[in-house]
Length: 64
Figure 1: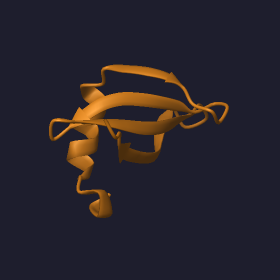
Figure 2: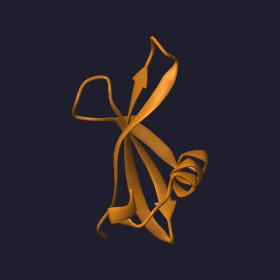
Figure 3: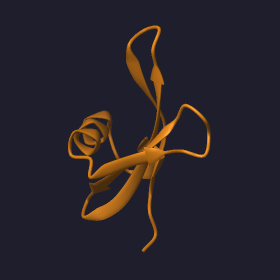
């Protein structure tokens, strides 16, 4: 997270204020469309149904 200039708190806020979502190209994963520091970002997540968690795989800014 540090190499992409966001913290765990930032990530939680990005997920809380998500604009939308769609299926990822990897089955079982989803792309969360959000914003961070006035820029568009995508967060890739994968539900862990066994432990009832949402695992964050990666997050990255989207080029305009």
